Amino acid sequence: MTSPLQRRKILIVEDSQEIRKILVLTLELERYEVHQAENGEQGLRVLQQVRPDLIISDINMPQMNGIEFFKALRQNKSFDTVPFIFLTANNTPEDIQQGHELGVEDYITKPIAPQDFVAIVHARLVRAGQVQIAQMDQAYLETVNVLANVIEGRDPHTHGHVERVADYARRLAEKMNWNGDVLRMLEFGARLHDIGKIIVPDQVLKKPGPLTDPEWVLMKSHAEAGAKMLAPITHLRPTLPYILFHHERWDGSGYPRGLKAKAIPVEGRLLAIVDVFDAITTARPYHPARPSHEVARFVQMKAGTFFDPDIVPIFMQVLIEMKLITRDQV
Image (tube, rainbow, N blue to C red; front, top):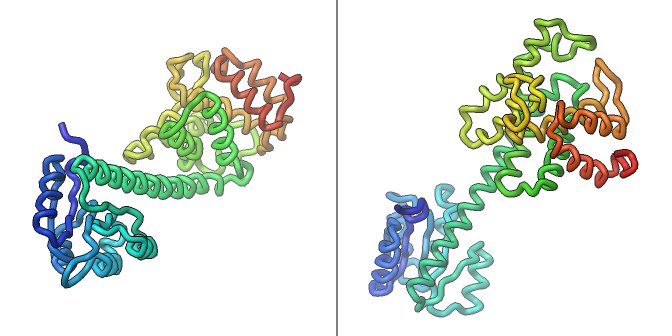
């Protein structure tokens, strides 16, 4: 079975037929799709037919050398972000300096052992993939923030709730040794946990008094509505447990599913604690803000009924570190 990297397209631009043949064969044995050209001009013609995932080019070539080829490449918006490696027999400080000034950081010095060549190519493709993921994450985060701001914009009384919940959730998750992709999805999920309130009318969302039974049914529908909204977005599917289950309660009294104890996904159990803490410590139309130490005691009292009894003590540590409560208040 081949990895996704092994079917990537690579363009080799090298005037030496012997070296080019060796490089092409080496990469083809690794199951890459390899295209080739003997100089920069021919390389540009190849690019009219193929968009490679990586370009490896010699510097010293007739007709159009590697530096000229790279400059021409970066003037074309279709190829201005394609990863690029210079191939050189000299590796002189002048070549390296010129490459750095153009934005090329990777060099392969000829001759090179096949296994080393493959390792460098693979590492460069991995790094390019990481950059693309980071850019994608930033784009998703910006989209998430826009969606979250839509909700907060409808209700000025909840201004800052999303940011605070995301901050509490991240600190708590780090205490629980979450990291990497899991932590990144937590941030998205925390920011989007109330996205389903888009369907709740203003007269219900902003009502200063108790909700009627029909209004309460409508308000409670926001968890499932939010999950349905985001389910088609593949990259955001890991956020669904935060959105769907943050109102579930340890004793089964929550909604929308009435799940109990560890049948509630841990994402929902974590977010339930920080969501309630922030909701009670900030003023709403239907209640004044309560002091942090009072709300911390309430959360502790509800450990094992509303909240996961294993996570609550960890959240108390977070609040102490944030100087929102003192040790003698828990």
